[in-house]
Image (cartoon, rainbow, N blue to C red; front, side):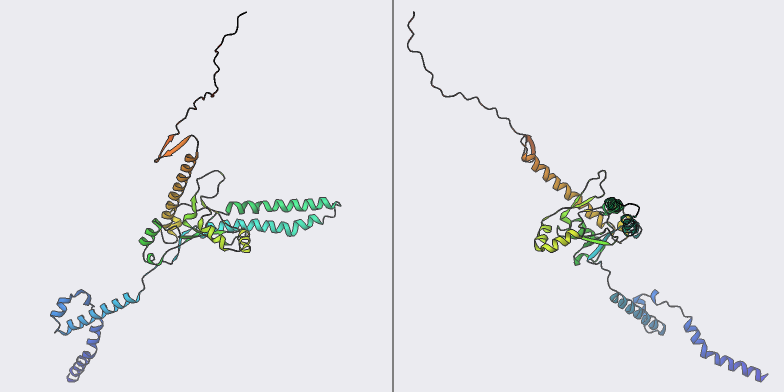
Length: 329
């Protein structure tokens, strides 16, 4: 019996070595639920000193992470409109199909018609080859004309002081300077990107019309004229060959501005372009009215020009009075 009690005593004594470790691992973390006043009040207790130390350590680590985490900023070359990969791929696919059809005709069908042994007349063979080549180029030319205004992306240059928040970007887009640059990304005849950079002051809104495939137009403003004066003749010729874009088609919809993550920015730019177009048209109407012969603008009120009646002038011819009578017969 004594040996049995001795074994129980040894087991009880040895359990003290692992019991604190188990209790420490299962101890709940309540440091975040204890206020600062209570920690200072019960700082003499060992438990509360550990709680206070844990709270200070957690607070220091959280502050360090906050300082190390950089604040999100928008890029200065901001993407404000995106038509989507699906729509862009669809347009590029049909342009590539038209080019493939034209290339197949030029490489295979045109030489076969020109070297046709069943047609001895060389002029007829040449006419057939040229005619088939021209017909094969029609789908490519039509697609190039229709899809030329299609815009896949729009980038806007913004200053550095408005890149910290979306509200600041919207406020800048609500009243942008005339020198704000916009870069429109379109597609060439071969389906690759074509970037056109313009200013906000050079854009005009186009009304909807039948067989019109654009809703924005770029006009030759003073900035464009200044850039052209700086270019050489070779650069001007290269720009002409490089498929210049003067008209653009931008779809309306909230989804196209939600995709780049800046909703409402392009809407503000488009609204400003519309107001700018109305002001320019109003000034043009005033010039036409002021130059008209029947209407006159005075003090902002359009009135009729007073009609002047020409007075009839009597010629200054001396009147010869009859002073003597002729002799009566």
